[in-house]
Length: 384
Image (tube, rainbow, N blue to C red; front, side, top):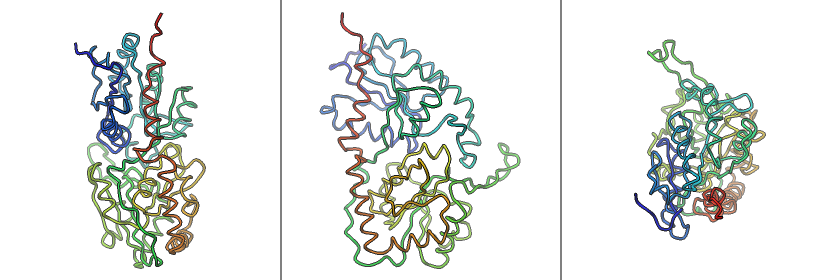
């Protein structure tokens, strides 16, 4: 068996997918910490499964595991828990989204994951998982509240989503000197925010009907009307929602790119505004404000839905959109924000927000919070 010096320096980051979640929550954090490993006092290792070799475990300080909810995951964690008194590593699970039933709600119907998800089965896995853990890391305060309210689990730490300067670095835009006449508006929400129709197939013999999801009819009408009138340039990224079919030849469509290319692609669009409509439900309460901080980084004024405990309740007050906002109110809000003084005020506020709130991955506040989560002192066996 191999031994390591100093002991307790390795942190195993275990990813469960190649999505944006694993990049934001694990991959980019691991990459940054690897670059400052000596100062941080750890050696981060990114893995699809934990290394169970005793030599490696003797040098492991913590294992941070993305969504360990399968039977196989729980079985491996059981073995790690049994060996923990010998090796003293800390066992941590990481959740970025709601994967259980919280306050009577789970994955909404319009999210295509609900078509295949065995949510009740996942909910039943949590009581098996949680006793094996020393801590759970989540991305939002509401996700923490959900874990505590649903399962009575108290050892939950919020590590907010952050964005890396090494991918989102961009020259700060100077103040505009004229009002914006025809703004460019970006929507980069994933297809899980609505449901496109699915024709009959072996998996869905009757097909699947479309749903607006997070898009209210007023948000849709606002975009369609103003695109047709030539008052906005609309850029839709990733997938085309079914309700924009009538204007598909009048807008710019940008296909998805890999996660590491996503920041540069978004910056190349040079949007004046970014939007994120959200309907009020438990799943969305648990979501983070990632699209907001991305917009802050590139100097695009962000408009997001605001309701009690919305992910976007901390965005600039001038940009908060009530859940019952009308298309006329959206038009008036956009008109006001296109005025140079208003636009400059909000954009400069957003730039400051990233620094003041430690929302860069490289910020001391985020790094210290993450490193604190890896502290295994509480699982060390006292010397007698």
